[in-house]
Length: 209
Image 1 (tube, rainbow, N blue to C red):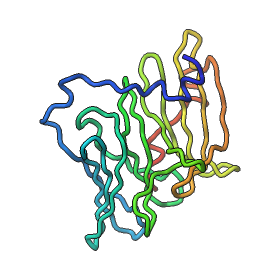
Image 2 (cartoon, rainbow, N blue to C red; image 1 turned 180 degrees about the vertical axis):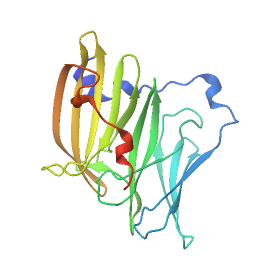
Image 3 (cartoon, rainbow, N blue to C red; image 1 turned 90 degrees about the vertical axis):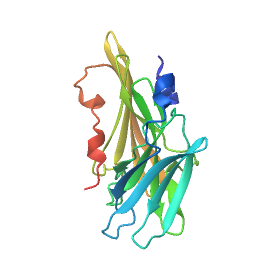
């Protein structure tokens, strides 16, 4: 697998067994998160709607916002949203699954902006932020959050292929400001060990403080 393939999404080919889309699975999943900074939790739900999925938030005053997004995840698998603070600014963001691959989940991120609702995080060119978590015997994909670097980066992704000589891949850092993400640096690596610092990324580090 080439580096271009790693950057282009080769880890995220959707796969699902026929039985995985059975009717016994729940049709929605919810978490609580403070997405508007008022100190109280909102009810966040992801559910199926026709060919898409919908992420929604219900507030203490009973107001409600939602945003639909395309998903290549078969049936009702991996509905559970993850809560993160990608910009390390104290604001909770929502991570939703857009595709399920061989041992790998593909995510999109949404953030709440008053007067706009739940807005998908994109680059300055409008392309949605997409990242991965998983891997397996032949690949590795993960992400992490950290306090701002000198260039303002707070979010890092790692994607790599496992080879006979070690891990070959790329580590990319991003600055995240509300609904906009800007790449700030990229490091290619070849033959890296599994415990090498360049391949380390812990999704748990993105949990809101």
